[in-house]
Length: 284
Image (cartoon, rainbow, N blue to C red; front, side, top):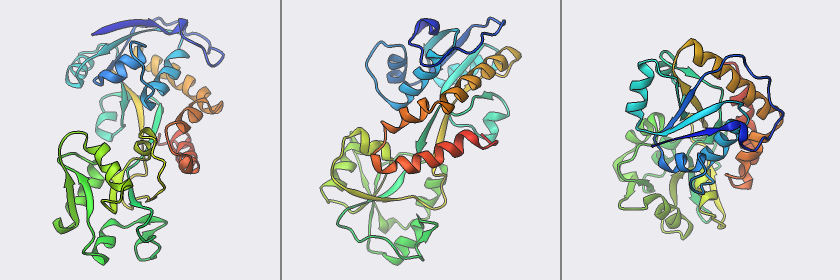
């Protein structure tokens, strides 16, 4: 499934950057059907990934060819030299050795340790590392407590490794369909005391009940989604134009303000801290 959109005709949010004399055709791929339909305006989708990528693409004076395709097929074509970018990819050393990456397009706060509001506040300095909870130390101190998890999903390498070292007696699982929605409901209605959630999940489900959360020590506090593109001279020019546009969106706070609508209000300062870090440190 593919669709061609001229981003020149899209709503413009910033004064256009000077156009390059180079004319290249770039294919934007995603393996997420909802993102594809949202970005190409074929269906309403207000997800963060859709909103941020639309902001970027609307400010690129270039025609883009959008495709819904499996990652395996996309990377095969990239390895064959086709001008392709995948959206919302995390930059790793292995990937960076093969492909080009843009500056961050969006930022997701990592999963946090959530407790319902009637569970005791965790303020023991032996359990907190710069305000982040030492997950293993917590359950070692409270061996009868249980953490509700989704069955057979990955929480990311760092958190998966922590959970693997957590005794089985401290873990319980929610199985079946709509497990993430069910887990939030179980926490809100106090059927469980502890679980791991993204702040975005609380916002997306429009949860009004107060909850308490802590960063988890030993895992990155956020992940940044970027364009990952074919490594070629042509695509290097494209990435340079993308990065120029992103810097303008950073400077004008347009991209940051878009992020604010996808998290609960109490995380605004946390998001501001990590958004600044992700978009200014040279490693990014």
